[in-house]
Length: 217
Ligand code: E4P
Image (cartoon, rainbow, N blue to C red):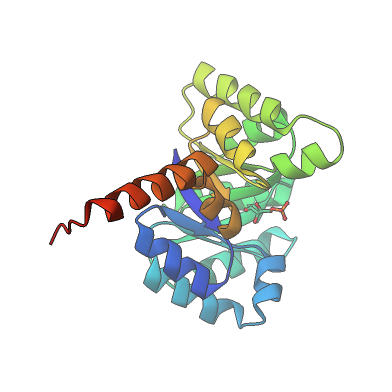
Protein backbone atom coordinates (compact mmCIF):
# COMPACT_ATOMS: atom_id res chain seq x y z
CA UNK A 1 0.00 0.00 0.00
CA UNK A 2 1.32 3.43 -0.94
CA UNK A 3 1.47 6.20 1.68
CA UNK A 4 0.45 9.75 0.84
CA UNK A 5 0.57 12.46 3.50
CA UNK A 6 -2.60 14.53 3.88
CA UNK A 7 -1.27 18.02 4.62
CA UNK A 8 -0.05 21.30 3.14
CA UNK A 9 2.56 21.86 5.89
CA UNK A 10 6.00 21.99 4.27
CA UNK A 11 7.91 21.13 7.46
CA UNK A 12 5.98 17.86 7.90
CA UNK A 13 6.25 16.97 4.20
CA UNK A 14 10.02 17.56 4.17
CA UNK A 15 10.56 15.55 7.35
CA UNK A 16 8.43 12.59 6.18
CA UNK A 17 9.96 12.64 2.69
CA UNK A 18 13.37 12.08 4.32
CA UNK A 19 12.12 8.87 6.00
CA UNK A 20 11.61 7.23 2.59
CA UNK A 21 8.02 6.32 3.54
CA UNK A 22 6.26 8.88 1.39
CA UNK A 23 4.80 8.10 -2.05
CA UNK A 24 2.77 11.29 -2.56
CA UNK A 25 0.78 14.16 -1.02
CA UNK A 26 -2.88 15.18 -0.91
CA UNK A 27 -4.15 18.65 -0.09
CA UNK A 28 -7.63 20.12 0.08
CA UNK A 29 -8.96 23.71 0.41
CA UNK A 30 -9.23 23.39 4.22
CA UNK A 31 -5.59 22.24 4.52
CA UNK A 32 -4.46 25.11 2.24
CA UNK A 33 -6.43 27.60 4.38
CA UNK A 34 -4.81 26.14 7.52
CA UNK A 35 -1.33 26.61 6.02
CA UNK A 36 -2.11 30.33 5.54
CA UNK A 37 -0.11 30.30 2.27
CA UNK A 38 -0.77 31.00 -1.40
CA UNK A 39 -2.30 27.86 -2.97
CA UNK A 40 -0.24 27.71 -6.16
CA UNK A 41 3.01 28.60 -4.40
CA UNK A 42 2.55 25.87 -1.81
CA UNK A 43 1.67 23.24 -4.45
CA UNK A 44 4.79 24.19 -6.42
CA UNK A 45 6.95 23.88 -3.32
CA UNK A 46 5.45 20.48 -2.39
CA UNK A 47 6.01 19.20 -5.95
CA UNK A 48 9.68 20.15 -5.62
CA UNK A 49 10.05 18.11 -2.42
CA UNK A 50 8.02 14.98 -3.28
CA UNK A 51 8.47 13.46 -6.77
CA UNK A 52 5.27 11.38 -6.40
CA UNK A 53 1.68 12.52 -7.11
CA UNK A 54 0.55 15.77 -5.40
CA UNK A 55 -3.22 16.38 -5.38
CA UNK A 56 -4.43 19.98 -5.87
CA UNK A 57 -8.18 20.57 -5.68
CA UNK A 58 -10.27 22.77 -7.99
CA UNK A 59 -12.64 25.28 -6.37
CA UNK A 60 -15.18 25.71 -9.17
CA UNK A 61 -18.41 23.69 -9.23
CA UNK A 62 -19.07 24.29 -12.95
CA UNK A 63 -17.58 22.02 -15.62
CA UNK A 64 -15.94 24.86 -17.57
CA UNK A 65 -14.48 26.33 -14.38
CA UNK A 66 -13.12 22.94 -13.26
CA UNK A 67 -11.46 22.43 -16.63
CA UNK A 68 -9.91 25.93 -16.64
CA UNK A 69 -8.67 25.63 -13.04
CA UNK A 70 -7.43 22.07 -13.52
CA UNK A 71 -5.48 22.99 -16.66
CA UNK A 72 -3.92 25.90 -14.79
CA UNK A 73 -2.95 23.69 -11.82
CA UNK A 74 -1.57 20.95 -14.11
CA UNK A 75 0.95 23.45 -15.50
CA UNK A 76 2.53 23.97 -12.05
CA UNK A 77 4.46 20.65 -12.20
CA UNK A 78 4.38 17.26 -13.93
CA UNK A 79 3.40 15.49 -10.70
CA UNK A 80 0.26 17.56 -10.01
CA UNK A 81 -2.92 15.46 -9.82
CA UNK A 82 -6.18 17.35 -10.34
CA UNK A 83 -8.58 16.77 -7.48
CA UNK A 84 -12.25 17.04 -8.43
CA UNK A 85 -15.43 16.62 -6.36
CA UNK A 86 -17.69 13.64 -6.97
CA UNK A 87 -20.51 15.47 -8.77
CA UNK A 88 -21.75 15.03 -12.34
CA UNK A 89 -19.71 18.09 -13.35
CA UNK A 90 -16.68 16.70 -11.52
CA UNK A 91 -17.06 13.36 -13.33
CA UNK A 92 -17.39 15.11 -16.69
CA UNK A 93 -14.21 17.08 -15.96
CA UNK A 94 -12.48 13.84 -14.84
CA UNK A 95 -13.27 12.33 -18.27
CA UNK A 96 -11.88 15.48 -19.93
CA UNK A 97 -8.58 15.21 -18.03
CA UNK A 98 -8.40 11.43 -18.55
CA UNK A 99 -8.67 11.96 -22.31
CA UNK A 100 -5.84 14.51 -22.11
CA UNK A 101 -3.61 12.13 -20.10
CA UNK A 102 -3.77 14.29 -16.94
CA UNK A 103 -4.10 12.41 -13.64
CA UNK A 104 -7.16 12.95 -11.44
CA UNK A 105 -8.24 12.27 -7.87
CA UNK A 106 -12.03 12.16 -7.46
CA UNK A 107 -12.73 13.26 -3.92
CA UNK A 108 -15.58 13.25 -1.38
CA UNK A 109 -16.69 9.71 -2.26
CA UNK A 110 -19.17 8.23 0.22
CA UNK A 111 -20.77 5.34 -1.71
CA UNK A 112 -19.80 2.36 -3.86
CA UNK A 113 -21.96 3.68 -6.71
CA UNK A 114 -20.06 6.96 -6.70
CA UNK A 115 -16.79 5.01 -6.90
CA UNK A 116 -18.17 2.99 -9.83
CA UNK A 117 -18.95 6.21 -11.73
CA UNK A 118 -15.46 7.61 -11.07
CA UNK A 119 -13.86 4.44 -12.46
CA UNK A 120 -16.10 4.54 -15.54
CA UNK A 121 -14.85 8.03 -16.48
CA UNK A 122 -11.21 7.00 -15.98
CA UNK A 123 -10.29 8.56 -12.62
CA UNK A 124 -6.71 7.80 -11.61
CA UNK A 125 -7.69 7.77 -7.90
CA UNK A 126 -10.98 7.55 -6.03
CA UNK A 127 -10.98 8.98 -2.49
CA UNK A 128 -13.52 7.34 -0.15
CA UNK A 129 -13.61 9.35 3.11
CA UNK A 130 -13.77 6.70 5.82
CA UNK A 131 -13.36 8.92 8.89
CA UNK A 132 -16.31 11.10 7.95
CA UNK A 133 -18.49 7.99 7.49
CA UNK A 134 -17.34 6.58 10.84
CA UNK A 135 -18.20 9.98 12.40
CA UNK A 136 -21.87 9.47 11.51
CA UNK A 137 -21.94 5.86 12.66
CA UNK A 138 -21.55 4.31 9.18
CA UNK A 139 -18.80 1.88 8.18
CA UNK A 140 -15.99 3.53 6.19
CA UNK A 141 -13.90 0.36 5.98
CA UNK A 142 -16.85 -1.60 4.58
CA UNK A 143 -17.14 1.01 1.81
CA UNK A 144 -13.50 0.43 0.85
CA UNK A 145 -14.04 -3.36 0.89
CA UNK A 146 -17.05 -2.96 -1.43
CA UNK A 147 -15.20 -0.69 -3.85
CA UNK A 148 -12.32 -3.22 -3.94
CA UNK A 149 -14.75 -6.00 -4.99
CA UNK A 150 -16.40 -3.84 -7.67
CA UNK A 151 -13.11 -2.63 -9.15
CA UNK A 152 -11.73 -6.19 -9.20
CA UNK A 153 -14.96 -7.56 -10.76
CA UNK A 154 -14.52 -5.27 -13.76
CA UNK A 155 -10.72 -4.90 -13.76
CA UNK A 156 -10.92 -1.11 -13.36
CA UNK A 157 -7.48 0.40 -12.89
CA UNK A 158 -8.67 3.37 -10.80
CA UNK A 159 -6.71 3.25 -7.55
CA UNK A 160 -8.52 3.27 -4.20
CA UNK A 161 -7.09 6.11 -2.13
CA UNK A 162 -8.38 5.68 1.42
CA UNK A 163 -8.92 9.21 2.79
CA UNK A 164 -10.11 10.90 5.96
CA UNK A 165 -7.97 8.53 8.01
CA UNK A 166 -8.02 9.37 11.70
CA UNK A 167 -6.04 6.62 13.47
CA UNK A 168 -3.32 4.00 13.22
CA UNK A 169 -6.07 1.37 13.37
CA UNK A 170 -7.67 2.87 10.25
CA UNK A 171 -4.37 2.32 8.41
CA UNK A 172 -4.33 -1.40 9.26
CA UNK A 173 -8.01 -1.74 8.33
CA UNK A 174 -7.65 -0.13 4.89
CA UNK A 175 -4.51 -2.17 4.18
CA UNK A 176 -6.50 -5.35 4.99
CA UNK A 177 -9.38 -4.10 2.81
CA UNK A 178 -7.03 -3.80 -0.16
CA UNK A 179 -6.77 -0.01 -0.59
CA UNK A 180 -4.05 0.90 -3.10
CA UNK A 181 -3.11 4.07 -1.24
CA UNK A 182 -3.82 5.61 2.17
CA UNK A 183 -3.57 9.36 2.62
CA UNK A 184 -2.67 9.91 6.25
CA UNK A 185 -2.21 12.97 8.50
CA UNK A 186 1.45 13.46 9.56
CA UNK A 187 0.77 12.74 13.25
CA UNK A 188 -0.82 9.37 12.40
CA UNK A 189 2.11 8.38 10.11
CA UNK A 190 4.51 9.05 12.98
CA UNK A 191 2.41 6.95 15.37
CA UNK A 192 2.61 3.90 13.07
CA UNK A 193 6.21 3.21 14.11
CA UNK A 194 5.39 3.45 17.81
CA UNK A 195 5.06 0.40 20.05
CA UNK A 196 5.56 0.33 23.85
CA UNK A 197 7.28 -3.08 23.65
CA UNK A 198 9.74 -1.71 21.08
CA UNK A 199 10.54 1.18 23.45
CA UNK A 200 10.86 -1.13 26.46
CA UNK A 201 13.04 -3.52 24.45
CA UNK A 202 15.39 -0.72 23.39
CA UNK A 203 15.69 0.47 26.98
CA UNK A 204 16.58 -3.03 28.23
CA UNK A 205 19.10 -3.73 25.45
CA UNK A 206 20.74 -0.33 25.95
CA UNK A 207 21.13 -0.90 29.70
CA UNK A 208 22.76 -4.32 29.14
CA UNK A 209 24.95 -2.99 26.34
CA UNK A 210 26.28 -0.20 28.55
CA UNK A 211 27.13 -2.82 31.21
CA UNK A 212 29.44 -4.62 28.73
CA UNK A 213 31.56 -1.44 28.52
CA UNK A 214 32.12 -2.12 24.81
CA UNK A 215 31.78 0.20 21.81
CA UNK A 216 31.04 -0.82 18.22
CA UNK A 217 33.17 1.82 16.48
C1 E4P B 1 -8.37 13.62 1.30
O1 E4P B 1 -7.86 13.83 0.23
C2 E4P B 1 -8.79 14.68 2.24
O2 E4P B 1 -7.88 15.74 2.13
C3 E4P B 1 -8.78 14.27 3.68
O3 E4P B 1 -8.38 12.94 3.85
C4 E4P B 1 -9.99 14.68 4.43
O4 E4P B 1 -9.87 14.25 5.76
P1 E4P B 1 -10.80 14.81 6.95
O5 E4P B 1 -12.12 14.13 6.87
O6 E4P B 1 -10.04 14.45 8.19
O7 E4P B 1 -10.90 16.30 6.73
